[in-house]
Structures are given as C-alpha cells and as structure tokens.
Image 1 (tube, rainbow over the protein chains, first blue to last red):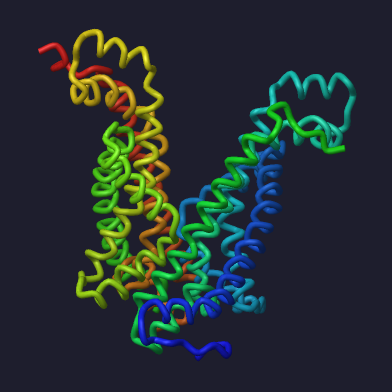
Image 2 (cartoon, helix red, strand yellow; image 1 turned 90 degrees about the horizontal axis):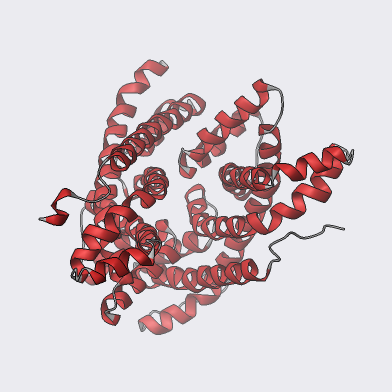
Length: 230
Length: 221
C-alpha cells in the first residue's frame, strides 16, 4: 500500500498493473526534475557560453576550467557535494531542488559547449556585416547570431534532454521519490524487485524512444537558414 | 583527521574505479564492434538482435539497469558478485553507445572504396577488415574518447551496489568525519585527474592510428 494504492502480488501481471498508478506518481516527479534541471541547464549554459567569449582573459579562462571540470566529474558526486555541502553554507534546499540543481549544473556544462559551437558556426562575414551596419552588440546577437544558430543547436540540445531524462533516477539516491525510488520501496516491502524494476525500465524505454523521434522530426522541420526572432 | 589522511582510502577507491572503468571500456569496445558490425550486416537476424540490444541499453537509465541486474536478476536464479555485475552492466551500456559510433563510422566510408574492393574481387570479410575498418577506426576515435569519459563518470553509480570505488570511499569518509566539503572536493578532483589521464590516453591512441599506414601491409600478401 502506497499513496492509497494497494498492490496485488498474486501474479506478476496483476502486480505490474497494480503498481502502475504508484509509478505514475513517481513518473511525474521524474519529469518535473528533468524539466527544472533542463531549464537551469538552458539558461546557465548560455550564461557560461557568453562568459567564455568575454574579452577579459581571467573570466573566459575560469569559465573554461569550470566547464571542463563539471563535464568530467560524475553527476552522483556533484549531487552528494551539493546535498551535503550547501547546508553547511546555510543554503537548505529540499532534496528535489538539490537534485534538479545538480542535473542542471552538470548539463549546463554540456549545453554551454553546444551554444559555443553554435555561435562559432555563424560565418565571420555575418559578424563583419553586423559591425559594418553599425548594429549594437545586443542587436547583433538577437537579430543575426541567435536566429542562425538555433537550427544548429536544437538537435544537440534535444539529445541532452533525453540523456538528462535518463539520469534523473540518480536523484533517488538523495531520497527523492522518483520512479526508481518508489520501485525500490515497493521492492523492499514485497521482496519482489523484478517486477517494479522491470516496469521502470519499460516505462523509460518508450519515453526516450518517443523523445528521440520527436527531436529527429523537429530537426528535419527546422529551416536550415535560421529562424527570425521578430 | 586532516585532509592528508583522507588520501589513502580515496586512492584505494580510485584504484577500484580505474579497474572497473578500464575493464568495462575494453569489454564495451569489443561489444561495440560486434554490435556495430552486426547492425551494418545484411543478415536480418544478426542486425535485428544488435538493434534490440542497442535500443534496450541506450533507452533505459543506467541506474535502473544496474539495480535490475543486482536486485532483480537473482530472483530468477541468476546472480553475480557486485564487481562482475558492475563491469557487466557498464560494458553493455558502453557497448550499446559505441555500436552506434562504429555503425556511423562504417557507413561514412566512401562508397567508391567499397566499389573498388568489389572490382578487385575482395571477399566481404576482407573488405570489412582491410578496407572499411582502417579508415573508419580513425573516425571513431573522438567519439570513443567521449564515451570513455562518460564511462568513467558512470562508474560512480556502482558505489550504490556496494562496490568500494572512489565514490563509495568518499561516502564512508564523510559518514565518519562529517567533513563533506573537503572529502567531496578531493573526490571530484580525483575523478577529474583520472578523466584527464583517460583523455590523454585516447588522444595518444588516436595519434598512433593516424600516423599508422591507412592500409595494413598484409593487404597485398
């Protein structure tokens, strides 16, 4: 019995069906964590990418080192770091927010590389033309650079959304009751891990497949020459 | 305890991490080539099995796979010790991601090369290993480098099935000392240093491959 839903362990099939509503609650947590983490990654990644282009060497160098460090260390250890160290500095967040923050931080290192690649891929002539037309820095980015880089970065950003979705179960380690966390609890109480864990895998599989197919469709539908923002 | 005293247990854990990572990268590479080649094969059965394997392992979270092999599989009578389970699951995951790299690289070999091989009456196996592969392997290296780093980061999860790797040691140290900031900072630096070594190793292999002859000398014998 969990969240008011009782399970029926008479056969594997009835067991699987009876825990579906419980896993559904966990799925919501999983999706929420991925959504919050992805939002952080998209925004903070852009900040990192822009800081990396700074003309002040100290800033661009520090950001480059930070990005590389975050990219090359495990999410789980970063999660533990945030979970145990932030409270020491008086920042007490619920486990869910700490988890989403860790996801967002790790993936902002990835997305910043995507943004950087996208900005670098805009031909030099475009920048020069913007300078020749006396556009301000803001106008150059908003009207020239960003519209042209969107078609290039959307597929890569989408792929990171899918991989982030697959990393959310790590949050169950710091007591977030996502799908895997709930499946483990059901396993502990019924002594049957096979069905709940298989169900989690079976729910993830179509989810990631559909997301990948969607990204592929978006990639094909995007105009290659760029999207006007206004 | 001062931070220097943390180093011994952390190094011990790092040794386990490196062992598991290297073992699963090696086995994963073999799986990647096997599944990648099977995917490009014209044999429907082989490519079907490879496809199912790749989709299954790429489409589900590593932690779920790990728990499934560790907690669920023994319930149907198949059980391995934690280290074997860890290496097995990581190898299967790395192999599934690597297979797509191998397939992509094989498909990127110019068709004219294959036509020339056919004109010279080379067998399919000979064409694969002596014409396509030497050219494809170099294309695979950058992606393999990324996968190796990903594999290293993924090894942290084996601490959750009671393997005493770097993350596990960090957890125990924190539980004893409650000195979270120092312990986890040292751990993160440890992973970063291992990652740097891995990166240099992969670059070195890539350089060696690029410098080597594009076609093995035995091609004409």
